[in-house]
Amino acid sequence: MERRKLYEIALTLLPGIGYVNSKKLVAYCGGAEAVFCESRKALEQIPGIKPETVDGIVSHKMFDRVEQEFVFIEKNGIKPLYYLDADYPKRLQHCADCPLVLYYKGNANLNAAKVMGMVGTRNITDYGRFMAEKIIEEISSNNILIISGLAYGVDAMAHSAALKYNLATVGVLGHGMQTIYPAKNRKLAIEMLEKGGVLTEFMSGTMPLRENFPQRNRIVSGMVDCLVVVESAIKGGAMITADIANSYDREVFAVPGRIGDIYSEGCNMLIMTNKAHLVTGAADISRVMNWDIDTKTVAKQMRLFRDFSDDEQKVMDVFADKKTVQLDDIIVGTDLSPSKIASVLLSLEFDGVLTALPGKRYQKL
Image 1 (tube, rainbow, N blue to C red):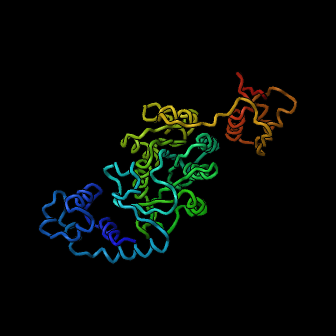
Image 2 (cartoon, helix red, strand yellow; image 1 turned 30 degrees about the horizontal axis):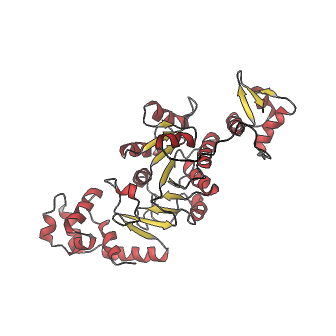
């Protein structure tokens, strides 16, 4: 690995300096290595550079830690991406607060022609699972990179659906590469490495602390062309990510939900306040983004040789030889919860198996 990477990583360890001033420092000195070759007097004359930052530069004390990181990233096949490198995410590079260095492991092109983020609650519902997979399935014939945060719930569903439909997907971590948090998603992260990858701005040893995740969220927002919020309460990480995406002038989409459902309140609020476009499928994204997407629309007829899941079969058994049934009959005739029934009925409608009629009735097609 090029030795210049030592200096680039060392910049991230300077005390008392933020994302903007660190880049100003590089610009004044002419490069990362040049920063550490500059005299104290010259450094003190650079606007916005604090005395403790100057002390850190001339002391070179951080280089022991940088050497340790070098050993870790080489041992684990991790690639450090400096913000001026050609393969650094260009969309993120244009954000004033982009990280100086990202640590990346994987095979995805971070500068793909089309990049979509998908985020939402950790407490994903059956409706959320259905809509997340539906949207990703409908764009699966297109080379779109899917970005999320590898958290429980919507994030994990987005990554899993991308893998299922053969799309590249990258997870942005809120900690160092020495671990995967949550641990339950470790297997998923490993599966993502083949065609996608994992990425973080945090050096090894950084634990998944609460304050790290808003920083992680800005990377998700900065790397994408558009962001889809599937389910979210009024407050939470997904809403923070949506706000950041709006501040970066990214297009935000939100899946509408039923009034009163706690994990649809955030999405409904984004739509109501014109902070997000309403999205029901990939065609909505294509229209707003002006993307030439070959969306997989489902014909309003039952797919030939369609296999039903166990829950779908329970619902279909209620119909038997009847053409139309009441919703109450379905509730009584199955052992499923109302939320599960709603999810199953929605799935069957989208696949053209059933159609909803007035008066809480469903007709078999």
